[in-house]
Length: 125
Image 1 (spheres, one colour):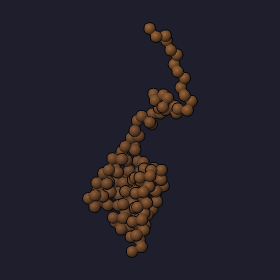
Image 2: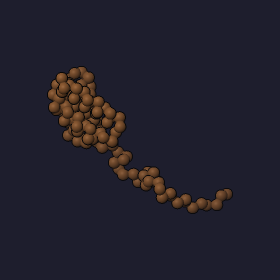
Image 3: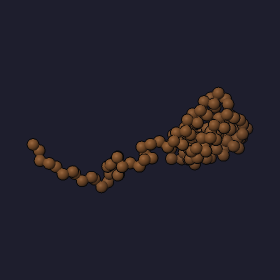
Image 4: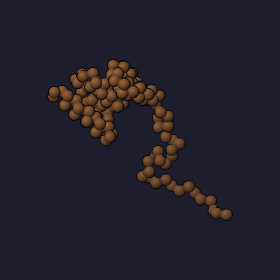
């Protein structure tokens, strides 16, 4: 039989979340219902954009923004809808908001920059 061992001390440089996952904050374990609803609305709006229905997509995306005002992808798709409608001023405003909220996501930062370039090219025509 092995002698009983005392629990080894936890390293000091390991984050608390890694040390004791059972103590993770509730927001880390349960998705935010408003964010989930906003995601569903955004996906609905994307489908509308693919069907060339920017007015309907705008209505849906505005609901998504009301549920999750910091969801940068909602602003990106709002910008896309306004591009489709030919309102480049509105498109640029939403592109700027998307850039602000998505600045920490390298993949989306590239997409937002490409969108901005498309807007500027069309404005120059």
